[in-house]
Image 1 (cartoon, one colour):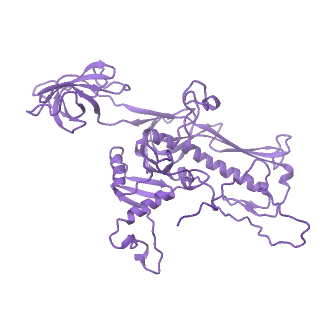
Image 2: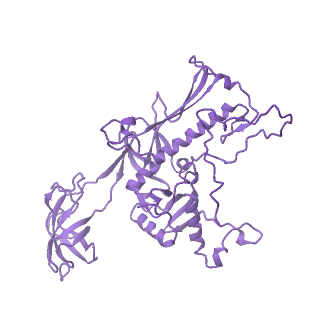
Length: 486
């Protein structure tokens, strides 16, 4: 059996720009002499309808006074080259390789080479296809072929010489060095290289307006909102819901924002035509999808799946504690996987609260687990809400539907240009525009001639909302985005 598609969950918006039949009570009939019983208080059938809380739980907010936010992140301590072609034959005692390096870089050794391998260093070389390997010593400073290509000369330690064939594609990394007695020191030196990332804030606005006459209109329905406001004045409900909706947008915009690409339609609206990324911003999903880790199969459902994720985390920052923000199906999959590890009862029913006493509640859920790292699980309402991502299709044809996000816990050290020094920052945090004269973290002001405002001749009250902010995703290589699609 399954839940029938009819009746379904309601998606009719509770807010409209114009009066509709769903905004007002329309069943009054003066030809009916009997007074119905009425429930004055509005029933909160959808519970807490807000979806924000994610960034409040994992991040922080701090001011910024620029149109651009930049930060530096450490590069790898050790360098490995994976695109090296063997120019020498099988069993050769000495060999040369062509090494292709990235076009970016600030230079590495004193000769000006953009390659972090020097004469007299010892290297490990292996064939990418077969895994056959050699240990060797570098016999000469790498020779520049082009800005992205170098020739490396080595001599093998093994008597059998080169273990792989000519033209094999190999990987090379340095594991040490060796010098004869009475020789000079190392040729050249290495310079540390940071990766520079940036983001720009976006301006988020909203407004609620009500005319002065409607502000004086009393209703029979007692309304209430998630922030506790209540009363018999309908405009109070609409104003508070506008405020709550705006607060949700402050978070969802930071999650979903994308930069406006060159030649896109949006760049002519919110950016500078012909200037890439001058509009939009880099939200959490965009950043993790671009330079983080992506699980493209929906939900990991077995320990072997999680071992694949853990293996990737080993190759990144290896953060000890991580928080999983998941949709409901993903949460159940984790519960089922962990329950299946239990060997004391059929179907995993012997785990739960209070030794699974028959008179006590059976807890069929888990809050976390440890396998290599600590993982703490929490439901993310944004991914469950049908008015947001909760009703998006799933499965192999649902490319891009996000089911969860792994966020590293704690903070990281970055160089803050405004402070001019290294500072600890949460992996996720929001920067809002502010200075001594203007704070744009969360601005709200009233215009008109009603509701206490007396700054125009408009017979209405207009409540304006504005914020200018960007999210900074530091160390995106430690995040994992779980979604469908390659």
